[in-house]
Image (tube, rainbow, N blue to C red):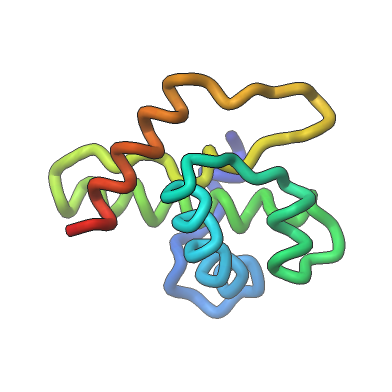
Length: 109
């Protein structure tokens, strides 16, 4: 949670912001497929050697979506929540599936 408060939105040139911009299409693909993705798989696709380095990447995406929600004056599902930890046994919940479906409606505009 602290990382999300510190991470800046997507528009800067810091490495995590550049990676966040690269991660968005991957996460949109996962949302459209209604499938989560593990930190490890996302890191591999983005060619990030350590999945722990995704913390600021995902925080930046979350902050950008929160800012966009304020501008649009409507809720935007937290796209970054599609990334899950395969070791902890964290399950993707029906609520997450609903958020994915809501996100699909936003990207079809």
